[in-house]
Image (tube, rainbow, N blue to C red):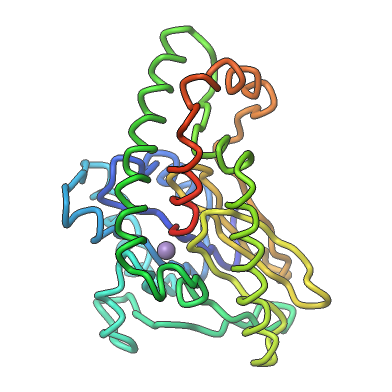
Length: 274
Ligand SMILES: [Mn+2]
């Protein structure tokens, strides 16, 4: 499919949780004029502890470089996990421009602010040690998820049950956190006279109308495998690439609830971070 723009965030290359294979599949299926990388693409935080860089992660980088070389406009907006790149604001590396934020005009003339969004997360902003602690917990969660997914495979069930995704739906404090985050981002975009905002950071993909302003979050490629695309007419769409029947998986989630018992605290904290 040919689209005008692709918006991706929170790929977390260099971590075990990164769903590089799904991402490659998605990229292959979508030709585009613009590719916006909306932060936390490469996880330097996690790699400072242990590097989980597979061959597929190289392929992701190669494919993106190739697209840039072939004339696709690629803009990299650093997030908090690749914040070192922020000092290169305005610098072009090969064919990729690093920009701390960007304004994108869609085909129908609407103005969108592109930011990663961590500056609107009060926890990562003011309590970095909590963020680092939560980051370790998140790694654990992702690993537990891979392990549970292996159990499920041995049980010959189809699909991929996401522990983090399940927990995300369950934990109320996480939900409140998401609302606070969204409100601050929306407020900032409105103050700057934007028609909408496209961000990432909280791993919670959505397109929603906030009193005339469009709040859009790209989601992630650790857990949900989601992307935002702009069609040739300027219409924005949320795509869930790993289109597994989640409802069918809910029962499994219930079965597994004992295993997860007590993990809520970890998950709630994790959601203050990503
Ligand atoms: Mn982030």
